Length: 107
Image (cartoon, rainbow, N blue to C red; front, side, top):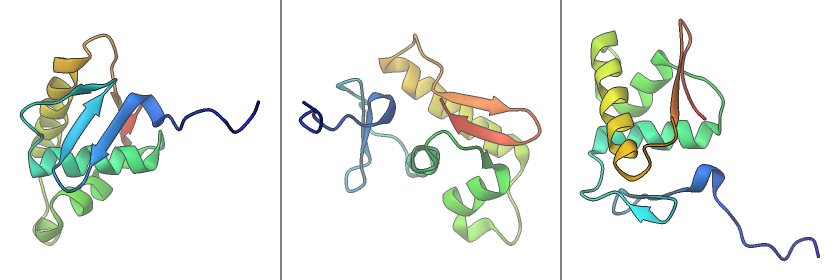
């Protein structure tokens, strides 16, 4: 019957804010993500498939650096590192998608 199914998080990812522990399809990312990687994943996760602009990423990941700005290279490098970490436990799926000229989203 409806309503009796367990809650499944989108895309099989669970986040633990306290420990920054991330589980992908029941496989734990070990070691945990860095603070910046975690903040980026959390932002993408909360958006649930909506596009996150680079500006939004800077605000979420580097709140203290908003004034002076963060280079596109720094954002790209962070996205790449986060992709690599997710690929450690699930190489079959591309979780983070680049939307050219717009930003990034979780697929």
